[in-house]
Image 1 (cartoon, rainbow, N blue to C red):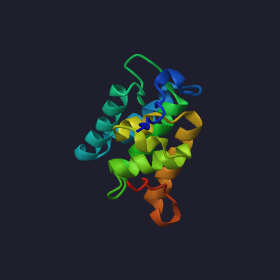
Image 2: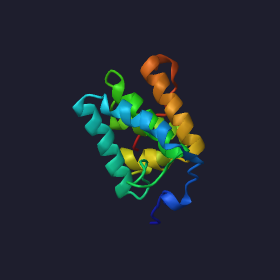
Image 3: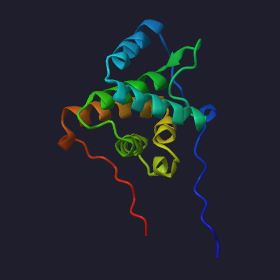
Image 4: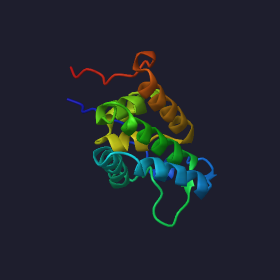
Length: 149
């Protein structure tokens, strides 16, 4: 019987990062992240760690500049973390799939990998979706994980 192998997920070298973000703009995210409660700050950190282990880091490494992609992904995650019960791995994965426009993020091993495969344009969509979910969840049509058959 033939086996189905899902398409390989992209790595950072395959993803359009967009332009570089000035450090002063990225510092606004650092301030917002620092203002989160400890548990929610750890959740964002866990997603970042997962993305780094999957070779699709969403945060700049120390001493490197951030890009539009990293800025938007972190802005979205910080927004989710600041919401009421929206700091959830499954929701982050569903929003990544919605922004990606496909089920590909559902094949990721972690939420960090699912979010990390988004390119700069998709990252901006992800950030907008995160804000919309926090502001008014009923207005967002979130892509659901396909049922296992």
